[in-house]
Length: 153
Image 1 (cartoon, one colour):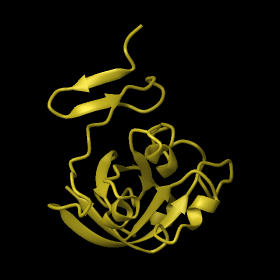
Image 2 (tube, one colour; image 1 turned 180 degrees about the horizontal axis):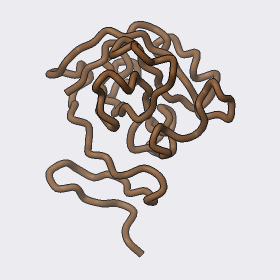
Image 3 (cartoon, rainbow, N blue to C red; image 1 turned 30 degrees about the horizontal axis):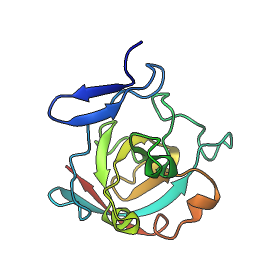
């Protein structure tokens, strides 16, 4: 049986999931909590969570891969945090987003990746982001539901 961990040359270690789940992702290009060096955008944040409720969008991202929550990432159980944005804004699937406000709240660099979308984001460009969290209660977080700075490489 193959090891569940794969080395990616000069990038670091990532967890390899079943082919039907998430593909391996490259490591975040951001290395400091302030997200130095990148294109900055001002956005309004909200939280969403995996649920059967149609307004929440289900348990998988726009390509059918499982969503990864902020709480799972912080606990070391997810390779990144799933976020949803406008899929007509030229943001490629899997793009890394650095959010200084979230990094400072948790005192670490968090790897957010754009892997989801929804009708609420159409025409919003870089001005709206939805962060995947574990529960409805987690979706009420004041930092998530406020002004956020989004930094793209």
